[in-house]
Image 1: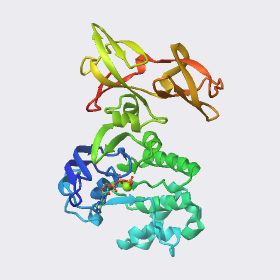
Image 2: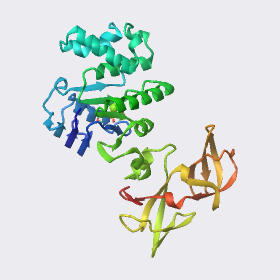
Image 3: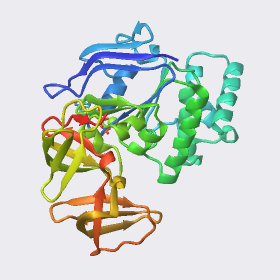
Image 4: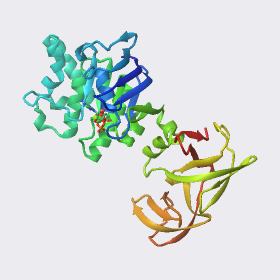
Length: 359
Ligand SMILES: Nc1ncnc2c1ncn2[C@@H]1O[C@H](COP(=O)(O)OP(=O)(O)OP(=O)(O)O)[C@@H](O)[C@H]1O
Ligand SMILES: [Mg+2]
């Protein structure tokens, strides 16, 4: 297994803005790192540069102490699993899994033993004689994984490998991958635009926008202390509510004015700057409390999910989305009061979108 290090890595296609522009990224040995971001943000391009399928415009890629920029994909000892896992249809499961070893001229006995080992690990040992068309989507995915694993690669690269599967199977495969990573302790780089996949599987997440990494941190850190408004809005469902506000500092207190309501907050500890001027206030749906405080609103949308309700309220000035898990069944048209939890506010600079606190 390898440590992967990128420095000042750039990929520019034609005259467009850079598809990837990463100053520094170190993926630790044995880490499960996810590249998360919207369509077109450069995730696949970055992964393909790691694989050697795309040549960087500038910058350096290192596996451990070795610069791999000039190495062919075959020389990098990586295993790649794509969304369309492209099994060979005319080969059996065993032949598919063992193919990378056969290509390298590994003797048959050794191959068979290794196939059996991998198949047992992935629980496909009873499928070894079948052809891919006789398998379910999840089984095919596991065969593709087996084919990737059989060579003991230095780095695993996954590009949205679960996005073709239905919801139940996706959740099952997420689980399998978590288990597999715990067992193999491989260095894994996983690309997805699905935040649930990113949050549940990763040791760390790199959130990307327009080719750049906006934040690199653990899933909890990303959720609790998003570094930018973009990250805050991208991670979390329903998305964080944003309110444009004006701050009037007053000693240890800052009075936040947002049109229809005024909020007095103590200057939180660990702010990078005093709360002042225009800013964006962020609050997650689960931190808006229904039936509390004195601010009034009307319920305009109710989405019932069985165990919880996602509720949109109209405060007269704006709409806010909140999550109610109280079990009480709310209805459209209901008049309610609400309160924002003061200890769960996020503040972002109005101009740059950078987090200004609390830390
Ligand atoms: N071969 C290419 N030639 C020109 N532009 C490209 C090429 N490959 C990718 N791009 C552009 O680079 C940007 C990043 O593309 P990339 O495929 O890395 O995005 P992505 O984050 O993987 O998106 P998705 O989630 O849709 O797969 C996009 O604007 C894309 O149009
Ligand atoms: Mg992609």
